Length: 381
Ligand SMILES: Cc1cc2nc3c(=O)[nH]c(=O)nc-3n(C[C@H](O)[C@H](O)[C@H](O)COP(=O)(O)OP(=O)(O)OC[C@H]3O[C@@H](n4cnc5c(N)ncnc54)[C@H](O)[C@@H]3O)c2cc1C
Image 1 (cartoon, rainbow, N blue to C red):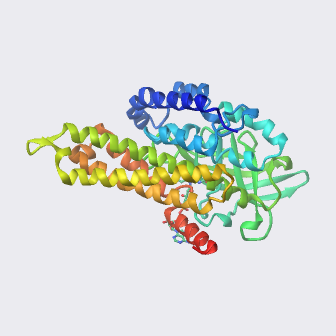
Image 2: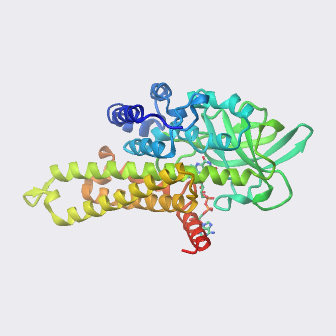
Image 3: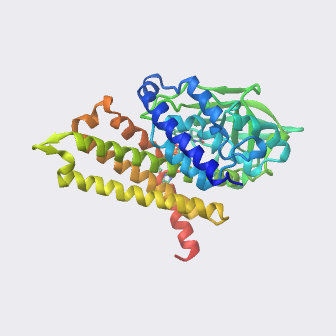
């Protein structure tokens, strides 16, 4: 289901103004505090942002992937932490439930996730399990009408705020991906502990922490899908998440290009604005060309996904290209700003640090290359 065109355009316009007028002036504060202000979170809840992709019957806005991508591009125009505040509810934290949940599980959780009352996190990565995510070691051992869950999850986005975790854990002795199941684990269960937020390179305000499960008793009706389906669910969730992240990369690139154009028009060297020097123009042309390519990839793939197509290859390609592209654009943005690009007041160095993460999480660039090659070989070209 999607919104009618006028309603969606109005939403996009509201988001655009919210980003420009409300969020951008707060960027330095989020960086300093490592937190998105609580009143901003409340405004995001009121706008329905926590339920963008959740069906209307559960209180969400029911956006299509294409619509969600267009909203994500708008949020790319400011500090990525703002999008992250609701990003796990819209994406990796809730989509396992949306895709594989029973009607009872959905009714129990989705309305509160859509409203932002419940914050969700996606817990796949572990201290010894990263890119090889089918080898998870956390264990969920059957015990009567439930499971006993033990293990540690690492670098979990929004863990410190989360009320509900989608956790991938091993339920059989099969060492491969087939032995993994997915669970909805409320933070309130005895034995769930969230560690202190990590210090990191960028994206301050979007915090990550370890989550430890110490013999947590999880009722059997909290399992998502059948036993052994957890890895498949996680991969479907990430397929979708990759498109969302690609859209954010496009938005950040477009923001940086606009900042560069403004600065290059004002800054004068050798008697004229630096925008009139052709070597500066070359950097702007390269950045703009690559951003346009990424935008086209993201929107075309999102539309194909909405039409029911298999977009595993295209989503991986969009994530690979868009995340590498925004890294190159951020690097050029520092260069175009000269010394100012290196100085915190201008915000360019902050975005330069922020975008580095896009090449790492939700599958590194190398993992995207592996998926693209595998799918291309499978398709015969
Ligand atoms: C800020 C942040 C937020 C995150 N949020 C979440 C979250 O919410 N939930 C969650 O579950 N995880 C999260 N992660 C974890 C993230 O998804 C992993 O860090 C990522 O998948 C890479 O895993 P790793 O760090 O263990 O690196 P590794 O897998 O150890 O990789 C190290 C290097 O080896 C390369 N490599 C690995 N295997 C291969 C191969 N077969 N061929 C070629 N190269 C290879 C990688 O590409 C990388 O360059 C987050 C991470 C960060 C930093």
